[in-house]
Length: 146
Image 1 (tube, helix red, strand yellow):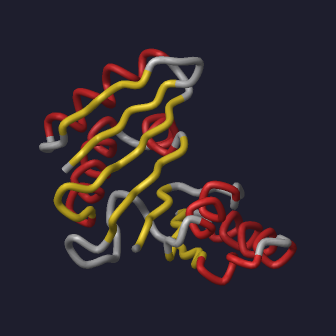
Image 2 (cartoon, rainbow, N blue to C red):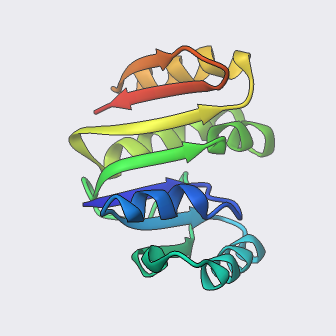
């Protein structure tokens, strides 16, 4: 099973948790300095599963993977950062890329910081062909299925 962590930042925990569950994980981040810090944290980690996590420099808007490569994709606040740092069309571009590399019938799990993001992310994900469920709770979580 293969998972993709979009916009991983320096946080190795989501990828390591997936690795413990049996996934081979590719963690992507577009900032090379952040990827270096991520790699350092993997080296310092005590988990036996860090060898199943591969960090790479990549942009969510232009993912370097074949179509239908991943069984699961996670995005912890990545779409928030794309909206903050990018152009309005960048979220749709990233959503299309994510849909392209996700296998049919598989899930994208999106965590969001802010309430306004919930509606806009839901709408964007639906517009590119995902079915979307919003999980209630303290954190905004959207589960999209291809």
